[in-house]
Length: 155
Image: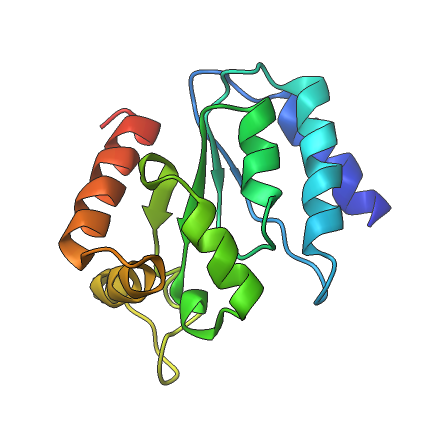
């Protein structure tokens, strides 16, 4: 863990405030809240408040995204095919993420929804699952995620 934190500090110190910082924060089951808090604390030391951030493969407990957004208003949560296996608390957190901060991903070739192979064109399946968990229309989730992606990456 110490080596990973040292490397993260080095990367954060070199971050460019005009380019998104993409963070993949994962640990053992039950560690996500603590790891997010540790990474957020490190990020606060090195990044500007308006730094754009993508939380890649986000799948946390309620309140984690709000804690990030309190410190970094330009943070986005990127939801992958793992949404197919979200537990009730992760689904609750998904519902709490504002639509204007939501991104979609397949993390291809990893994290398939079904089967062993994942492809980028399955992003619509991810959107359908996200929409179902949030009680929204798939096309609204896709449109918002598209607009958010364009905003985050300056496209």
